Image (cartoon, rainbow over all chains, first blue to last red):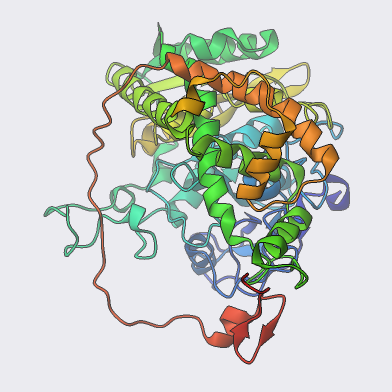
Length: 438
Length: 97
């Protein structure tokens, strides 16, 4: 089964502590999260032989919690993709229907959990990369609020957008893994609420994860829950997806929740804004891959620039080159104001409108993906089509908010995911809402 | 700024080569042609950002800094372990000019 799905780039066991909250559980770790002594490829030829000298903070925490890591999960190269087909190590297949993609970019993580090859998994979500594969494989995925989980040891693609998060068969299990990985980390300044010497620190400040037990929130109690449904994120979706989505809302209504529709015109610009910002950050972050400190050597024939360009031609796949080039273009003299500045305006607009919608509702609900899982190869030649599939997930990263994808039902035998979005550090709310659908 | 006023309805191969040069990525001719076509589509789509109003960005954030203290770091051996080539404790790279 394992070889068929290609869920792992590297299958290697890393034993954790003898006991702890995750004792006896197995965890798949996305291959852009550093594991000391075990190669971490990011799904790229560039890092095919890269062996990190240290563990990511989340890996340390999972091991301390007693879990056994069973392997490094396949992914779109550097997280750049929505299908796990851009991996240099071949595509992962969807265990639900093996001629379909598992979604991406954390496709190996979701496929491993859905197929029972791991009890739990870690993914990373820059524009939907946890929620999309969770939805396509029929499992649960959580994208935490920016700053809830340490990114130390996560190989950066677009730092202002990405978070590490859990994938699991049930909401409660995903929440248990979140309890283990969430919390402040001196090695990631964006998680810090705990440093009394820091500027901006106020007495009584604590990290939100210190005050919460996320697993306890999976109690299925949605009596009185008010849900807002953004029209723009439902209208464009496939018919079967929309039907399944409204059936799930009816189910919640029968349990005492209520919903109203809202209009958020800002989301029409989310995909564009997301790609401009993510590509811009990628073009800068991936400049470190020069074939000198790590990666594919560019040789010693030419000067530094020639060797650097040769290394990156050999080491990077097509989607990575496309994004690095487009990011370089969008940030170059003359175009910065036109693309990057406007994208930051769109980001601020989306953040403001989501905060406003969440002041009149407990959570927002949308289909996680507007489409059902693609067939393998279907979207590869048309990058723009692949980008547009991220319409419902990217606004959440732009707004720095928490979201969960939970199975809502099936359409023609394929899983459909429901996404709940909550206010910043409102993970308990989205966990509670999602658990009512199980 | 003047360049930005022109709408990139199509992207010519020379632009793709120029950007690839800035990004230090070698491309073969097939890549250049394909990227020129795709970039026209994608950049055309990004044009809709023109419709986005100016929005106040008043993020309430503070820098968090730790005291600058000496602490353990990677050994020289560990730092060099992933380098394709090293020599006498240094990274080995191509000539600079």
